[in-house]
Amino acid sequence: MNHALDTRHAALLLAPLTLLMLLFFLMPALSIVWTSVHGGQLDLAAYRELLTSALFRRVLATTFEISIEATALTLVIGYAIAMHLARLTPSARAVMMIFVMLPFWTSILVKSFAFTIVLGDAGLVNRAISWLFGTETPIPMLFNRVGVVLGMLNFLLPFMVLPVLGNLLAQDRTLQRAAETMGAGPVRIFLRITLPLSLPGVLSGVLMCLSLSVGSYITPALLGGRTDMMMANLVDFYTRQTLDWPAASAIAMVLLLITALIVVLLTRVRGGNVEVL
Amino acid sequence: MPMIEIDKLTKRYGEFVALAEFSLEVGKGEFVSLLGPSGSGKTTLLNLIAGMTRPSSGRIVIDGVDVTDLPASKRDLGMVFQNYALMPHMTVFENIAFPLRVRRVPNAEIKRRVGEVLDLIRMPHVAERRPRELSGGQQQRISLARCIVYRPSLILMDEPLGALDKKLREEMQIEISRLHRESGITMLYVTHDQEEALTMSDRIVLMREGRCAQVGTADELYFNPVSPYVADFIGHSNQLTCTILREEGGNVVVGLAGGDRRAVPRPAFPVPVGGKAILLVRPESASLAARADDHHSLRGTLEASLVVGSNIKHVVRLDSGETFLVQELNHRLRARPAIGSAVWVGWSAEASQLLSAS
Ligand SMILES: Nc1ncnc2c1ncn2[C@@H]1O[C@H](COP(=O)(O)OP(=O)(O)OP(=O)(O)O)[C@@H](O)[C@H]1O
Ligand SMILES: [Mg+2]
Image 1: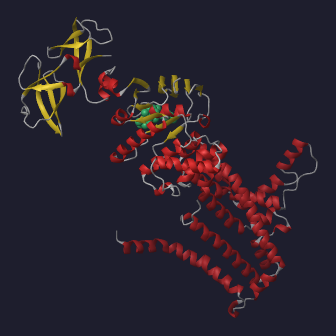
Image 2: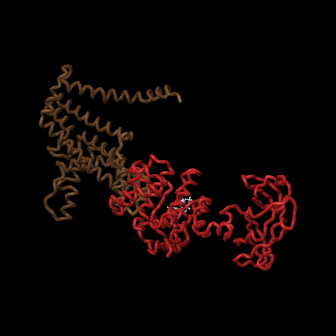
Image 3: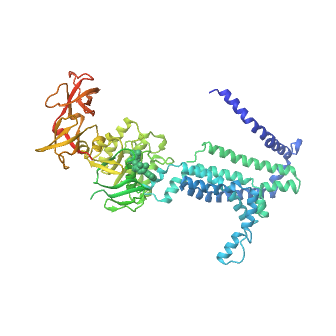
């Protein structure tokens, strides 16, 4: 193998993408950094203001809250789905995977509007509940935290199911059979064998979901209430309502940093550098 | 009371019958091997006993308890797998302690008992290691220890040495035999290595296409095979087609393809005159001569003589076209017939056996 030639080949093949990223990601990102320090003045006032802004701190807290709530819910439901899928025959699994992937292929805007129909006061869920239990007052599920978390759950599920399922399928079944002959019941087998062995998959799913939900914009905007504002919505607020572009840019930078941190963690998990067992 | 009673056990996969009306009894403390070619149903039988799969029909009784409908976790037996099946995320100690924790044994006793079995398998220093830090042979020893530690009344092993090289396999055979002797635990052992089965077992179950071809000690299978299949599977054999000519005292006289006549002890099955049968002669019961005499009356051509240390194997093409193997002790001074020359083979009547042709 000619190593130098390989490297040159790789460079050639990666060039278009690199160019694209430079033009449409790095340049705008740099211009945001530029704006956040008030252009050539290298003024950190925008960042200083953020630290003292009660609004920013509240939105930061809300962002983490919603992200963690949504990720936790996705983990529980996604794990159950993955376990079910792992037990199916390959052909049945292929069919079921389509349903898992469906939200993945649908525009988030379309999904969010669909949720307003499903979760509204006269929506499917509320009508089913009032029909089942004969209750009159609808349960508020739209324009509040419930709506946001459910919307995000729907969006995040494939990102949790795929890594966990991949891990479960790769697990050696004889381990469970061995445990069974040793007298272990299903709960113990799950807690002592299946679950610990699946931790790398879980961790990578969790980090993926966190990094995706931290930057949510449409879901909180369309399904959340006024108190469910997240970082991206705050950026929007500063750019369009108060026209305070340095503040908006500074928030964007903080958001970018948080996401980058999570992604770095994720690549370390994927690379197997993290000893989770 | 026997340790295992298997009664007309059948397992079907759709149309395919993996195990057909299989019956077997295994005594307490016995070491029984399941031997047979690939696909003969050995693993199927073991999985049925362990409770990994449900039988289509039939009954399994272990230690007097009908376990046919009991889940695997309630059968209280041990299983050793070919790929060891140690938990990669647990230390050796935790692996061996696992079945004890399941049984809610107090911590102090767990510590003591794990220490004991680690001594028993002569690996007292590996308790804190992970399985992947051990060699294949060591891992299999740990997996044996994990079985023995909770003292099941029965241990099932599915080709436990299949992944090891020959030398290690022989060491482990001795090790397993020793553990069997010292623990007194009944063991059911799957292998398709006949030498392994012959050296380790009290009894051998030879399987064929989901059925039992023969059950018996190594000697019984070797010296009294019930069918050409068994004779062929265990050791080497010469099987000559013959016709029953007459009975003569305790013997039957049969005619071979070349017209040669031979006396053979009367078998247990009926031998109608004029019927066909198979004459079985083990290579080491036969001898070779360069000239015909009373004893050596079957003519052929010497095709090859292979010296294997203390033994010499002659391959003879009989005039009837059948191949005949003769194994003799190798003497320094013995004159050997030249390859390609005419030779005569013979054997004493008592050393031969008649098998049913069907
Ligand atoms: N789940 C299954 N579905 C269909 N057929 C099966 C299944 N499990 C086993 N069989 C068939 O049953 C037969 C017996 O299989 P088994 O695994 O018991 O053989 P074995 O004697 O253990 O062979 P080996 O020495 O190769 O391990 C085989 O022909 C196999 O194809
Ligand atoms: Mg098998």
